[in-house]
Length: 64
Image (cartoon, rainbow, N blue to C red):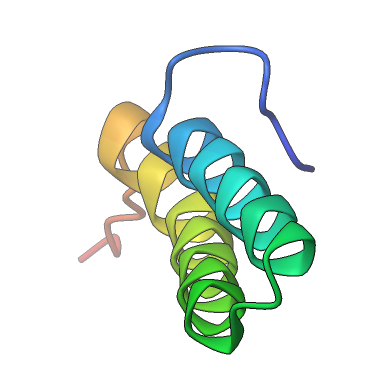
């Protein structure tokens, strides 16, 4: 489910999150770890929303 190969918004958010979390671990920065965690949450949310935006929702019309 996690598509980080392309330049899609979820992939960018996960790369930024990984960079911030690695930098935060290396420098003992709790703030960087928290911001990295926030970007992980944003990335997961975008994983759900981006395909709906990109490909649309299937519309089922009721027969009358």
